[in-house]
Image (cartoon, rainbow, N blue to C red):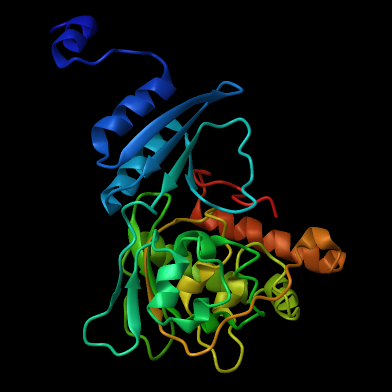
Length: 305
């Protein structure tokens, strides 16, 4: 068997025992998009990927799992630092920016995560009129401030479905959930996740949080606790999640006729909630994060809010 050094000579690759260098080498071999190693900060590697295909994000997540690198959505406002960990920022805005009508529908649009809000406005999706043009749809929906919608009224954004990549590298479609919806929970991960979330939504902590006009938690469990006139929709769990829960590969929106105006942001640190509500919200957030991302491959938190 040839030695490692001989194998490296014939393949043209330098053998290294440095995990970060190995991660970067394998990223360059696997992805079609642009990958840039930014070096190290306090000894931990930083890199960026402009994903060219959905498979690029999947390959990146696989390697992030293997090398314990934090997988972060690039472009978030109020981005939180991730001390003590190597980080890969993934940017969908260069290549993954399709925005097109869904065939055989009058009012639905298929949107990739890198599509800019400006393009959605031009397409006639009025719900985006109040939001900044420069944000991608992925960063907008992940933003806690911009997605600070009234409790139980997440349907205002017109989000119908979302295709997501979970931390365990499985894919699923999140969408409406209820007696009138026949779409099965297609993966084992989702089959385990959905019942756990509904049990959480039925608990005392969730009921306490739902009494507030501003949802006090980081993750929008009120997606499963809709107000009158709205429906349960698992894709609404992505609103304001900060990139902490999963990677969104695509969205389907209904074109809405009214602009959405978020409420003034009130996080738990703003003293807008009493201690019992704060503790309830933190309990819910911890459970949701552990259900979606038990190994912590996504940031926690992605936004410093």
